[in-house]
Image 1 (cartoon, rainbow, N blue to C red):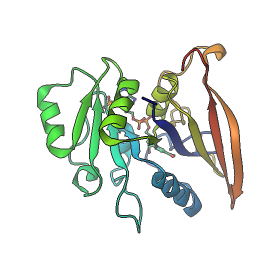
Image 2 (image 1 turned 90 degrees about the vertical axis):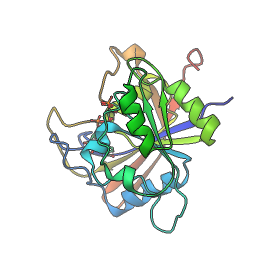
Image 3 (image 1 turned 30 degrees about the horizontal axis):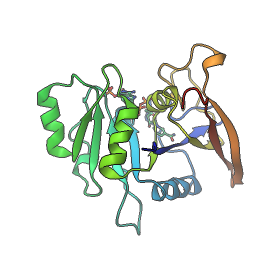
Length: 224
Ligand SMILES: NC(=O)c1ccc[n+]([C@@H]2O[C@H](COP(=O)([O-])OP(=O)(O)OC[C@H]3O[C@@H](n4cnc5c(N)ncnc54)[C@H](OP(=O)(O)O)[C@@H]3O)[C@@H](O)[C@H]2O)c1
């Protein structure tokens, strides 16, 4: 079985930040940036987002945008399963919701999550096992193209697992600054240059005051 194509989309400031350090400033891209996000959603079978992003963005519903009745599967990653069950996403109709959690989440929490979602899939002990989880999404939901919309910790997990095929970045003309402001790949990262994930520039486009970049992964044949 072939693995789904995994692509990330993020907007970032010119200093590489994806939100302000208080995590409250979440939208700073232009209309064109948002339209591009909707275009990418339209090309995906599933959209992935991390629990940190849900917490920071109370209005996020991962909807496909106007004029589209069927949206991609909505997938939330929360190893701990500790997501705000009152979040708008659980109370907005649309495509099915799947939650990916670590093994060891309490039965009570699993039950609570199951009442609000289509599926809760457990894998991995300290981290979700994304290879297994993506196989599951591919088999059960026919998810062949998975769009990851961040945030930084989730992106880092997928990049370290060597699962990211493409990164779409919008560089926006502002500086957010601050050592605590999140970047496109926070979390654990790589210890040294030899281990880093490598990408090559596939395309670039200047639109208004922003630049859209697409990178494609250079995969090590040994790992794949
Ligand atoms: N500019 C943009 O394009 C953009 C896009 C998205 C988000 N953002 C911003 O980014 C910030 C959030 O980023 P973030 O890095 O704090 O959070 P995040 O990546 O959205 O979510 C992190 C959480 O996801 C779960 N998770 C991630 N990887 C996991 C793994 N391998 N195994 C198990 N669970 C995993 C964990 O949840 P548990 O703690 O429940 O275990 C973790 O705490 C917000 O400010 C948001 O607004 C910006």
